[in-house]
Every structure is written in C-alpha cells, then in structure tokens.
Amino acid sequence: MSTLNAPRKRGEGKRLTDTERLQILGLFSAPVFANTAPSNRRVAKQYGISESAIRALRLKEAKIIERTNGKSKAQLDCTRRYATAAFPELETQLHAWLINMRRQKVSIPPNVVRHKAKSIANSFDPPLQFEASPGWLENYRRRSSVGITILHGEGGEVDKEDPELLAGLAVLSNIVATYPEHC
Image (cartoon, rainbow, N blue to C red; front, side):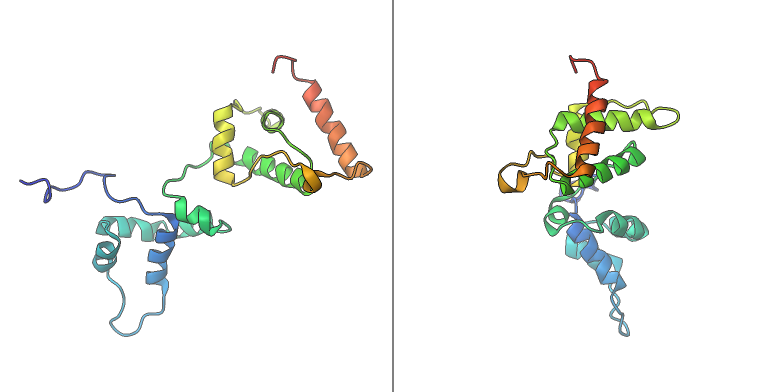
C-alpha cells in the first residue's frame, strides 16, 4: 500500500485555526435554501480535514463559540490548540483583579501577579494545591490574553491621591510583606 493512500492515524490531520472552525460552523448555521445545505463530506474536502473532524466540530459547537467569544481576530487566526485552566475560579478572580489594576494604571510586575495568584489560591476553603510558577504565568497570559507589562510614560501616570488606589496598594503591600524575602 502506498503512503499516499494509507489511512491517517488519529491526530495526524490538518489543525484548524479558531477562525476556520467558526467559518465551518457558520456554513452549517446559515439559512438553507432547498437542497443547498452543505454536506459534511463537501466541507471536509474543502478544508482538507476528515468528515469525522467535521462531525466532532459540530458536536462541540457551543463550547467553541463560548471559548472564542470576545477574542480578537488575531487570536482567532493563530489559535489551533487550546488548553483549559486547571483552576478556573482562581484565574477568574485573578483576571478581575488584573483588569481592575490595569484600569487604575497600576504597574504590575510578573512576580506580583504570581504572589496575588498564590494569595487567591490560599483564600479558598480548603486552600488550593497551587504553585504559581513562571510557566503557569506564561500559560495564563496566553489563555487570558492579558499582557502583564509595566506601564511607563503618560500611560503609566497614576493619580497618587486616589483613596481607592491607596487602599488597594496598602492591601497589596501587606500581602507582599507576608512572603519571605527570598521569594
């Protein structure tokens, strides 16, 4: 049997981007006129994937739409594989905190984000067995699309008299003070 006609092994096919996944799902959700409904076979051939991949995609439609909701076109164009978070509630709370700090134009270095993640993990009952490693932070940044950068210039200026900001910084300072110096 030649290698051209040999059946492909599971996972060896073409990987679709999220943009392509949404396009395929759009083909099946578009209004259908008479006998113009696309077949799984025709769409699979058009995109260079198997019919079973199309069937699996259609079964996961709700999850795909939920996962891609709110993502930028650039993210959709480059996302081929995705990972789910091991601690989704922790990441949700951390994301809200980061957005709040970003709104206040507070400079947040990566080690502060890791410390905040650890404190959130410890606030759960029972505390989560969680290590905020540099690798976890990098993966979190990729999953959540939140850049963790230090603001500078005009965009980095902060109202130093804002009482809400001062209270938040005091809380953050107390949290950081609880960690040993070598961290």
